[in-house]
Image (cartoon, rainbow, N blue to C red):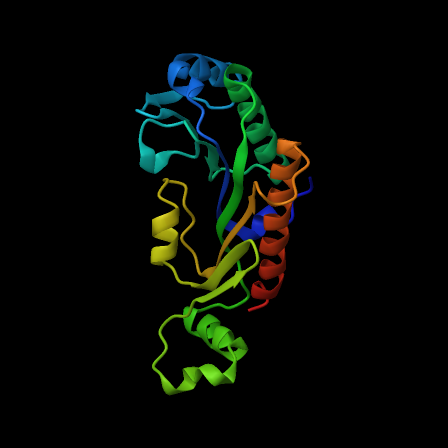
Length: 235
């Protein structure tokens, strides 16, 4: 799976893959075994964990604000969140390895929903936020009458079948960056923001190959992100 965007043009990026499944009580009785299996994958370093009422959390930092990778395995969901993306292929390999470590203990799950969210800030051609804002205003349809209001920021949300995306200009010190990227390596720069969220429901056409379907949803989300980036990077 090839990187869809040149990493030099990505300021910050977070990817979340989640499988929601029908309640599986075996998870409650096997929290320790699940932790051992995931730790043995050696993909979280250091390995920090917490036991919850409904499952486990494993991460790579004891401070939540500085986590770069975090995994949740609970009674009805499995998710992997990462803001340290070496490549999209490596990210998916980590998800696949840790999910298999999870199912080695609890067995197969009955999928209800697969979701993929990609949140990022990216480079642009504008040199100032004012210039970037003007470029955004130029592509907004005239019927919104943006010239009649003292516009200080913009955000566009589009909802489509099985997903949605949000885009907008990002200023230095922007709340979008501060909210989504709390780790110490955050890059706080002028640019554009993209938030893509796609999903697949278990009652849709499904051939039973769960990880293949997860990869399909992941690939679709990457395609939306790339399409938006290609347009926004010219602003």
